[in-house]
Image 1 (cartoon, rainbow, N blue to C red):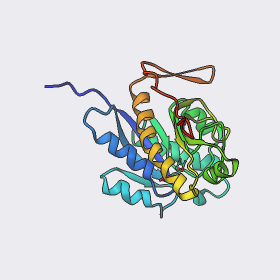
Image 2: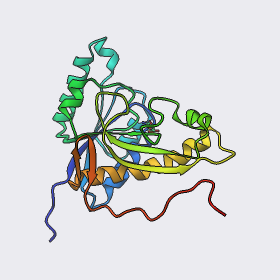
Image 3: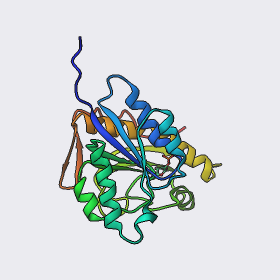
Length: 222
Ligand code: GRF
């Protein structure tokens, strides 16, 4: 018999459709994946991701921030309490549309990660695909990073670059980036769960990662 190695208990915070959440849930289904999803928590009762999580047999909770009025500290205390109650050790933000204060970020420091649809530090904030098209960049992508109090800031764990194509509109570009997100987020969670991430001077080192093979050049040389 193979000994059961303890898997990292992760919680996922969502506000919407939850496709990245789904990618994490699916990755965790693999018997040798080193993490499991202990709780999916949404601040929106109507989030489509909640139904997807329930269908996958994952415990869910709703904590509507509106119920806390302007008291962000109380909302965040409730978030932490719900996560702790579920035994969560590590938190993944996956389309969670609330800014988090220093107190929450410090409580979960280096155990709180986010996925953002751009190659950070370019295009922090919203509408990243529209802004990438407007800027005329040839490469766009996504980033998984540790969360800090400043928005879309913090040590970078994984990035994926995708080409921007001549006939792209926002939807086509978003779909290409999203497919990359669904590969990057499970990878970042696995690296964290394997204890291979170390933050030093606000940069993240990844232990034992091979170097990628080639540059992605767009347009490609003939
Ligand atoms: C993703 O594009 C993610 O990068 C951003 O919010 C979006 C969430 O999409 N933070 P989904 O809910 O995971 O489908």
